[in-house]
Amino acid sequence: MKHNNRLSRLSGLLFVALGCFISACSTTSSNAPTNNVVTTRIGVTQKSTGIQTPSTTTSNRTALPTQPLTQIRMTDAMHGWALDKNSVLKTSDGGVSWINLTPNGAIVTPATQAEFLNAQDAWFTMPNEHANTVTMFYTTTGGTTWNQSSIYEASPLGIALTFINNQIGWFEVSPGGPGAGSEPVDIFRTTNGGMTWKKIASSSDPQSGLPTGGDKSGLSFTDAQTGWATGTVASNAPWLYVTHNGGITWSTQSITGITSNAHTCYQTTPPVLMITPPVLIGTEGFLPMTVGISSSPCNVQPSTVLASTTDGGNTWSINGQMIAPFQSSNLYVVNSLFAWATDQKSGTLYQTQNGGKSWQKIASNTGLSGPMSFVNENTGFATGQADQTILKRTNDGGKTWQTISYQIHR
Image 1 (cartoon, rainbow, N blue to C red):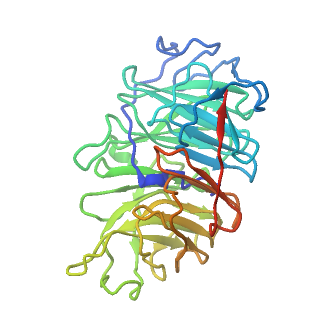
Image 2: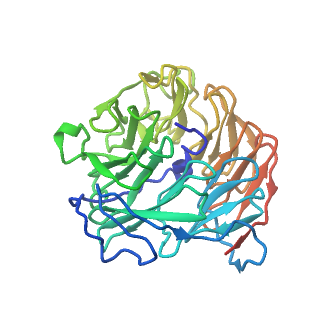
Image 3: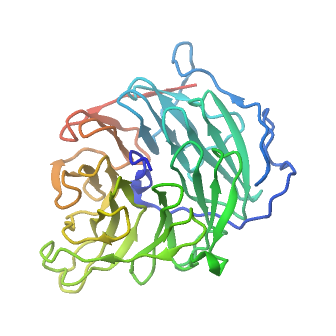
């Protein structure tokens, strides 16, 4: 599992949802875009000539209105992908200019899920509630051509899209979305890069082990067999499920311990308000959590802690991990030691250099509260709030930031 962009969903720590599987057949959907692509249903081999898009140079291009970036994934210091509210974008000059590579017929919305695996392989979704369809767009050419396939669900909104390589990936959806502390869920898998998708698990099937209860927050996998599903429940208990057969069946997994001196108000394990998918680097990994108060009269505000593993996710614990003095609106892990998080109230940037055992405040008044993307321990990019066209770069691990006045072109 790559770790550079696994925590992009932590921006805002939001949950999104989606809908009910309709059995596959070979008929092309009448709602599919007519743009040189044959759209097929689940389990049918797709035949596609591809949707052509221009090169990524900015010469002789039309400037577009600058929009806030809602997701960013830099593959190195110069190259990367992003989403704004209606486009798929790519840069080759360190974020100064972005090329709109959205294929014809595609509509990017706030419900769009995207996975940018590397400079060549990328996927994004176009849910259509009225057609009970999710169109999956995918490229293996860095966005110069796109293909598409369809997943049929009722009232779809995507929860999570994740890939471990350019062939194997998963898509988590919720029939009808969340309500009253519960959220039905279906999980689809592809083994051919997104050309076809198969439903492999559903909370409507007791044999899958996935409950309807709890609001779901996403998936992550370390290989073709082992992965985790996360969420939150009204009882503020940990909602963590693990699979060892590629997502077909799931079982609960516990999280143990707490640092007794992390905060004097935490006498026992604090209530868990939220868990988002773990990040693993080899056998070491982190499970981001937001925890609440344990008892009055402390009135401790919700705080961030990274549960950790040293055995590849077989066990998780918050023993030895600091309950940080902030609630994260975004969090980014770049390796087994370094991670960054922004306090969602103040915008103050924090850093850990020891895998969450301690956190240090490294920058104040940054104006950054949106998605981040670090390419190493020194170089990173970060964005502002959803309604702000702010993009900044750091070359010293987040201590100082330089504003990038970026432009978008077609």
